[in-house]
Amino acid sequence: MTELEIKYLKNNIDKAVEIETTDGERLIAKVLFVTDNEEYGEHDLLYEVVSSNMLDSYAHLENAGGYVLDFDKILAVRPLFDLSTQMPKASGLEGKSE
Image 1 (tube, rainbow, N blue to C red):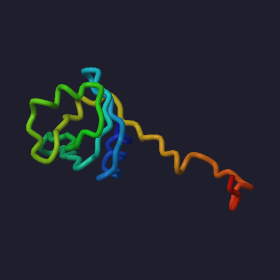
Image 2 (cartoon, rainbow, N blue to C red):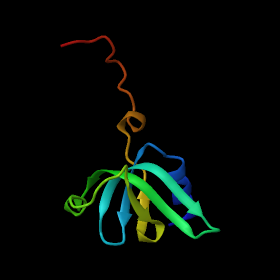
Image 3 (cartoon, helix red, strand yellow):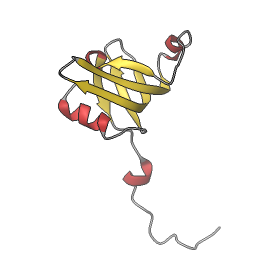
Image 4 (cartoon, one colour):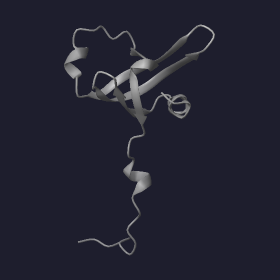
């Protein structure tokens, strides 16, 4: 993971992000906590699963408030596309009804 991706995770606590892992999983995860402790060699992400292409792999695990994913298992972190901030507002349609 890049420093930019780590910073992005830290800035998006309690928000959903897209994550791609080394085992081919693509998931939407709600970021709960990011551990980036160089001194103790701890680098991981605590998250809740929102959606995953490997959802069955979570069925046998007990979720005690979240799952942990080591940084070395993360290939990429991407923001989710937010239509409310990306789409231009239509003009000239205010107050019209059909």
